[in-house]
Length: 104
Image (tube, rainbow, N blue to C red; front, side, top):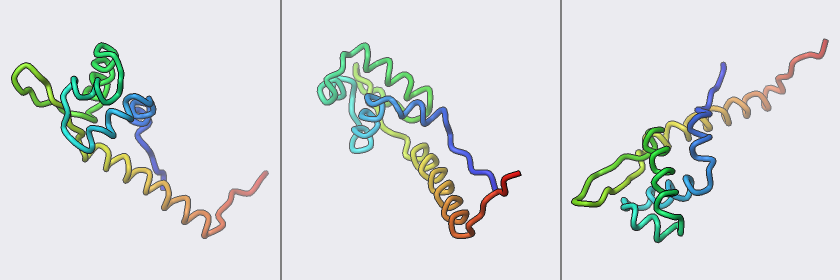
């Protein structure tokens, strides 16, 4: 059985600032102003990272007056976690079965 992990999503989350943003948004819905305060990143840099996260489907937006609030889409993170859990189960089963390919 082939186990696959969403490598595009891993690349998106591998950036330290994007991972920090996702971690903050997992705890509460925040606007850009809050994220600037929490991360210390410049507004333009933060906006670029939020765009990448939006396009990857990791976060969604909610307009609120002149502000835009962001929140994590839990299903996306759960799917990635499930893919890693499947990979771990496969590795465990392989180790327990001592399965190895013979060398030619």
